[in-house]
Image (cartoon, rainbow, N blue to C red):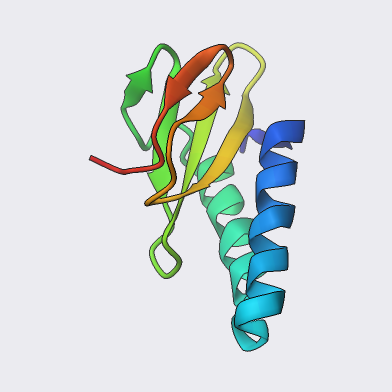
Length: 105
């Protein structure tokens, strides 16, 4: 099983998303946290699940919440680096020096 490391930009993304849910739909906020944690567990077990999209970055879509996880798998170190956590409809975000969209295509 790979080790999952949540990079600081992704940590900020998760916290901002959680704040939004706490303000707008507090009954769903806990579910978002659970969905993110389960996705990280899934990526730890199946890190090569998604194809590379941008350079080495891969995209994993949450099934219940409209968010994607951009991540990179370092096979040599057996580590998953969660790079960003973005809403499907978000505009471009910075992904290690590259602009990407939150839309899963």
